[in-house]
Length: 242
Picture (spheres, rainbow, N blue to C red):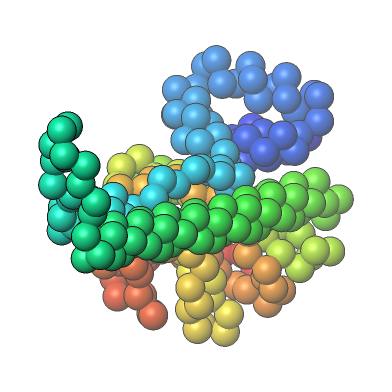
């Protein structure tokens, strides 16, 4: 069992602890409010890895259909006593309206089918990432290190040389201001490489990073939305791995 009970947080969230470690950590959770808060945040972050949600058609499709209806003239009212046969132009307008509805409906179906395929691909990717995380966190050579963030929270790195990969877990106390975001970095030979950009307002993340062999540091910076090619601010955490 690890000497630092706090270091079990990431492995506990991903169910990668043995029975003794689970009992010890759950006892610790009852006494440590910070770990309870971080555990809740990381549970949500890990759940998002395999989250597949249904997406409705974009609102513009409905507007397109209504626009076609609004621009298509209807047949004049029929007098009960006098049979009226629609003119050729009326039939043509009806046919054009019907064709427009068919085209729009077909477009909806195609877009929905593509969305379903995209959602399935995303779900499969999330399941693969989750399985990879589990493999790393249950590796016999697993090492876990952590460091506090400037401003509150911590970054935890679990590494396996056998798998050549690591899991970076970020749990910040608050989100950056002004729409800025947290960005993770790996440093090899002093050169930073992007390891993941969080969304605006996001304070917790679990990332699998391949090819960790030779990585000396894992860093965290605050960057503009969508992240940066290279760090533009000082590291709020610089976790030494070697």
